[in-house]
Length: 111
Ligand SMILES: [Zn+2]
Image (cartoon, rainbow, N blue to C red; front, side, top):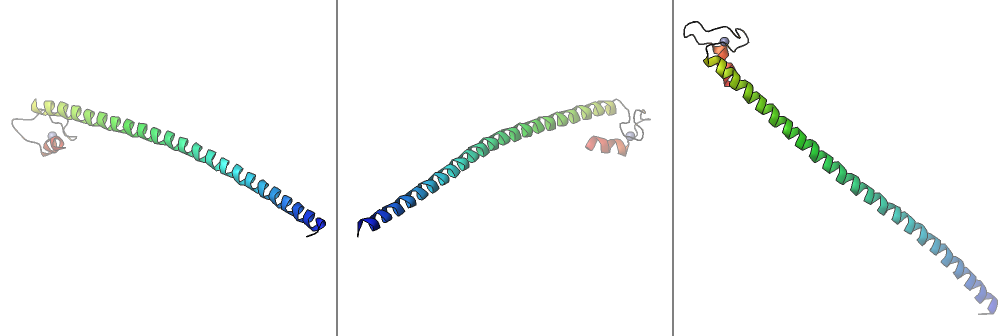
């Protein structure tokens, strides 16, 4: 090969390497962005999972509270019934006459 051809060949190779270097840098930059996005998403995911857990616990607490209130209300009704008062919606608060039984009241107690 003469010197001119060699020189041209070297210039071509140099240009190719520069182009490749630029491409490598671009891919590296894109890769870094993807990694950052992944870290952000992981953190966001952790935060959301934590929040979900908090909300689920809150919901459980509320359910427990509601169920306790229901038990308290039922106990109150049972006392009223044993004292001889209607606890059904139809005759609520009225006294039982003699030893009558009210199916509506019994239904309330069964709940
Ligand atoms: Zn009744």
